[in-house]
Length: 342
Ligand code: NAD
Ligand code: TDX
Image 1 (tube, protein in one colour):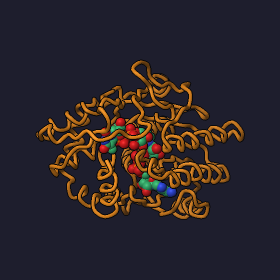
Image 2 (spheres, helix red, strand yellow; image 1 turned 180 degrees about the horizontal axis):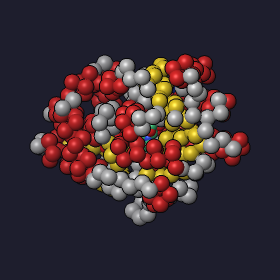
Image 3 (spheres, helix red, strand yellow; image 1 turned 60 degrees about the vertical axis):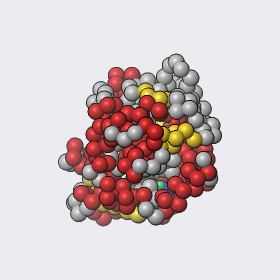
Image 4 (cartoon, protein in one colour; image 1 turned 30 degrees about the vertical axis):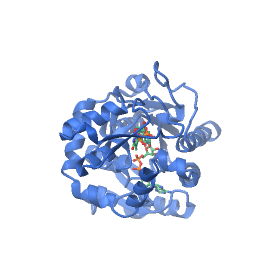
């Protein structure tokens, strides 16, 4: 299969590129990525020069750039793109609260531009990589199913929900073979240190305060990125067009517990924890019911949270130069602005 991946230089996308090249020796990949602050070709140094891989730097919301990515497959291997897996997005909730415009351009317009191009090129499978956040917030009980109402609360979640609805409309209106995956909070190698787990690891290593929003009792359902990548892969190969598939890690934890566990693994003191003002509109709890994916796709998470967290901490410990480079420059300005204000 020839697969066009968007956002393959980001956290989950780069893990997915490694997964596909490792698990499917017959597949070929084109990676379209704009290389925003979150896109890092250093995540992909191992695949440079691989004959089954091509990179195209482009904006997913730019129709000409998207055409270049489709053309790259023909040029490289003489065959058209068979499938699209769409990761490219602005992905950080706090940034969407500051300014949502890039979220609308990339997440909504970008998805529509990509859908139109994929339809024109007769793509046979289109996987939209979405999130549990489109379902909104839960209180103590229950878990989101694929039938749960769409009720996003942050500008990021609203932009992902809008994109999902365009994907749904492409299936309903044009019979375009699109599928949607919705996953809970990922963690693992190559995650940008603006997200909870790598931010806390990075700060703890530098002896800096660990900013916990509100009372620290917001609950997230953590999944190792490799389990997510297997879920997307199974959806691509076995999922039914027009369907939505949920993936969760069976690992609900309050944020404060996650932060304390990290400090224990790193052997750093709990007095590094700082409670800071809450995120506006902060969703209280996410939990995913993945039984449809387990039943239809034969998927199950393989990592336990404790093993996954330990292995992730070890990855960051052995990639401190990566972390240092990622944290320099533009990200430093954002960090100072965010946490000085709190
Ligand atoms: P990320 O921020 O690490 O990476 C996003 C990638 O998209 C980067 O490489 C960036 O350069 C690229 N990109 C951004 N704007 C672009 C544009 N206009 N054109 C082309 N490329 C562009 O994100 P992530 O955490 O890897 O998330 C990937 C996808 O998975 C997103 O769609 C996100 O909504 C979804 N998702 C993430 C999580 C999570 O916990 N991180 C959970 C569920 C779903
Ligand atoms: O400094 C922090 N302190 C803190 O308490 C940060 C960055 C976060 N938090 C809290 C907010 C959340 O309750 O930790 C939790 C996790 O926060 P994020 O890492 O920002 O993730 P979240 O907002 O839950 O969204 C993530 O999961 C769903 C991804 O960023 C999304 O892309 C994905 O769709």
